[in-house]
Image (cartoon, rainbow, N blue to C red; front, side, top):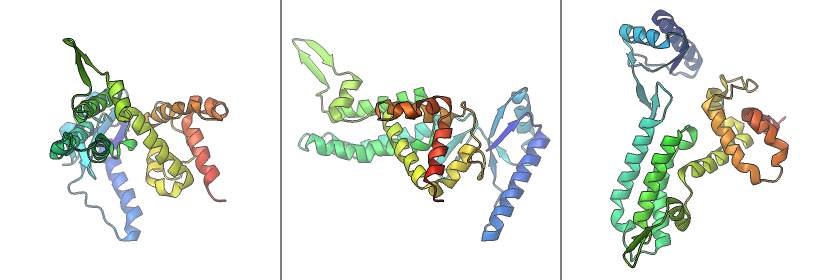
Length: 274
């Protein structure tokens, strides 16, 4: 992914070549070589005349390289706008496949509900959310995920989410369905998973080198805090705000409000062996 600010097509090409050369120098000592013959590029353009420059870059094709709106890398979709739309679609398709493959079992009333619920979480819900901790889904993305979840949970309840009394039909709300099934909505479930993941990074920072490098700019930039508009920082703040009920919250709340990444990095450095 090439992130540029006001670069011309020629400057962008030079930037790509320089990045490739730097990466080749880094991996050459371990006996690994790049194959850039099929290299694909997505452009995250911003700043004055960004669209005009992007059109110029697409016309020149950057020396034969494919300039795409999105690409798939290691099974994950990346977009030139930074959204997760295609990845969410892929997760929903995979979750639907899991549901259809085992729908007869999920809707078999001879199987106790708790067993069907456990199988649903492992086969469908985990497929839907697996690995999304590293993404920054939008409210619309969360709505789509939770809508799918509640729809399948209603089916799992085998009609118990709907009642009829004297020709009056009543349905449970989505919140009531989630409580009945003891399942968190997707935004809370992912927040819990992210906090567990980040706590692992705090205790063992060496396991998250690539993540920390991507998040904070470069491999040695542990003390360079990015701006609060960075989506990961916005999401981290929202996750940390869920901990208001935890003892000692008042001690860290000012730092959470001002710069949650500073709090996260401080915890990492405190945990690192001296």
